[in-house]
Length: 407
Image 1 (cartoon, one colour):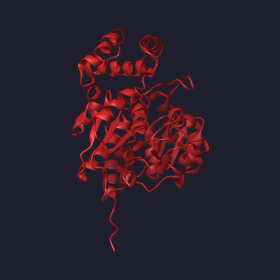
Image 2 (cartoon, rainbow, N blue to C red; image 1 turned 30 degrees about the vertical axis):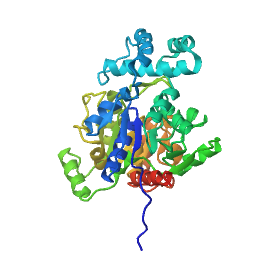
Image 3 (tube, rainbow, N blue to C red; image 1 turned 90 degrees about the vertical axis):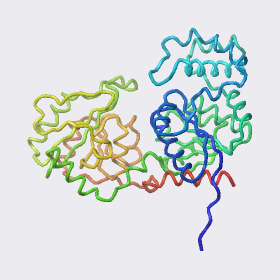
Image 4 (cartoon, one colour; image 1 turned 120 degrees about the horizontal axis):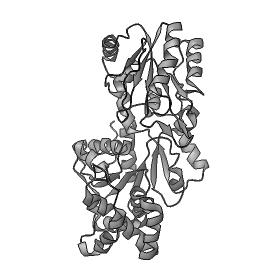
């Protein structure tokens, strides 16, 4: 007997900021469209261009503007001094003005114009959480539910407004919600929240999250990490093209930053990496290493890198396919590697990376410690993943949460 699934919402509102959050919303939007659903999609700041480039019929923050231009006009005028320096190549001047004007209007609705301007002078855009703007927008439109990711400001305002007007709401998280807990635990929040792991769900419950049903679904962005047919042949071809056949390959994915404020400490440079990897590979000739610059912070291979290769521009998935073990300071690729079942060594920044706390990586203080671990143990066991749902199931799991919301 076939069990008939509950229907999906026919007109959901999906919204997000950019980066990995836009990727989440893009995947969910495409999955909904494939099911015959017509979502309204709003991308704040850089997310709008990212979603449009991904082929989605997205709207910018301008969709939230008052239908009567005169209602927003005083706020557009008042924010002009604050727009200097607040530019981005992927955000138009009009979108920036609208973002600030609506943020100020929402703040003025709460505390008055004079106080709102003073808070804006002190805190900049961090002051924004325009619940009243979102509430008016939701009242002007008939949405079945609201789906957003877990950023502050406009996303948080949208989720709170949905609670006010009685529209089912869902917040979709990406990683381990370290900073986000400040506003997730401050009521009201979304009616539903998806998280990456079972352990994280328990942490939020112990921290006092109430009024929000937590669903362990994983992150849709990681669904693409599921092993594909023909991967063994592709791995062999890529390793041959890179001259790495027959070697145990250590992948080092570099982060976008060169320094971390939390530790006030510089990250390892390519020259420091080569200086450590070269003597290790000389002493352990079965190993080679692959340095992967971040696209935003490219670098050339240092001189004397006889046992190393510079990533020629592989996709993240292909770089992980080539690797046998991943060493990482601060990069989401460490988590992706763990999800793929690769052994991961987190070097020096386990508190920031977090996933070693969930049994998904080994943790060491220095790169030399990591290399000693490899020399001593040769083949590290992959992580014993007992905290994540099955890889590749997140998107459908979140659609099932949306079905539940409609019942």
